Length: 414
Image (cartoon, rainbow, N blue to C red):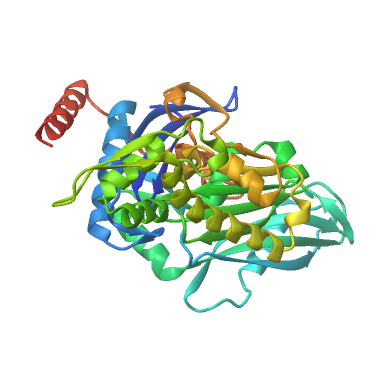
């Protein structure tokens, strides 16, 4: 049995990603043992719309990951997204009553327990309580107060709230797939642990994770998370704009976006004509790449403008000194960084998963796997941060061969 096995499950609008990894404590890296991707038809903008279809997608992704890893797991960290996510800032304190007046882990637990007593809407639950900074006897700027002497411990907390029905539907889908949830983790927080550098989070950075159904935002400053937001505009809306503007089916629109699409005219290398396949009585036509780019650019500029307004309204635009980090499958669109720099007036880069070790790590070093890699890392204070060994079972060689043969037959029949 392998130690420190952990699994992540990214429930996306277009695909479900599963990763099984082993934490290499000595190297402080994650060896990727297996990963799987399956089409997702049961989610809409980050929310479960069909439990049966979502469960089937989870089963498929986990089966592929398990057979690549040669073992199965029954506990996973699951990503949470959707426009139901909100966040608040809350400040609270506790009095240190021990004789030594030295702050312990128990005092931090009391702080968190106190936050959980705040009044929130009845249809919401607390997803995360993330301390931004601590103060001891009114001395602020403390990252870790354990061991410090004092009589009053105060914290400024970033509290993430989620819809109770949304979480329940995720739980039902995961359990119907034969798994249990170890930890629910907000997707932009997971992505940030995967792709951001410590210097960026200290100086001030905005992470923009562009998925299929939602775009997730996380803002960091002075090594602490300051703001999170989920916006319901993402890659699927770009595909739909192409579909409606050019009168093509969704699959063709997605193909045009990936193969020939740009987010801005300035990124076009050569403005060639491309073939648009006709539907029904409509014959094939040709359009210049610049026309396709105009369609894509309008939606992408709208998205980045919405994010820019969010940064300004939250009061953090001036604090983002390290710039913008783009990740998620939507960031793979050519010209995305150029458009981001144009809209935000800040430097931008593409974020890819970091701190990966051996195994299949090279195969998932892409922005589209940023969230699921973050899910295996967990977040400070979460259940998964303890890296408890999950209940696992090795898969026999014959079963693996049988599975591979079934997959081959399935694709041959398509």
